[in-house]
Length: 122
Ligand SMILES: [Fe+2]
Image (cartoon, rainbow, N blue to C red; front, side, top):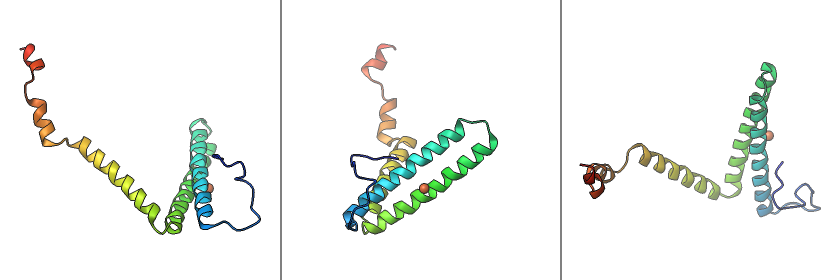
């Protein structure tokens, strides 16, 4: 399990967490789910035992559900702020993917224009 930089992350405090501390704890829990997914899938990929592979993959998929639950909880706890960042990240990747799929017309046109370098070979 990830521990990040807090040497007391496994210690239950003698008081309840503040909202900010709870948000940090949930981020740590999210990291734990991702680490678990990685571990289960790595172990499933590393074996030829069909039953073990099926069970490990099933558990990894359950961890994916936990990941989704925690992401949703984080969105609620942050009053939607986290959802905004996630949406921004999604849009940035979608924009990059769209640009790669179809380059800007001027870039495509510039590609066909002769340059000094291309004329030297002619
Ligand atoms: Fe889990």
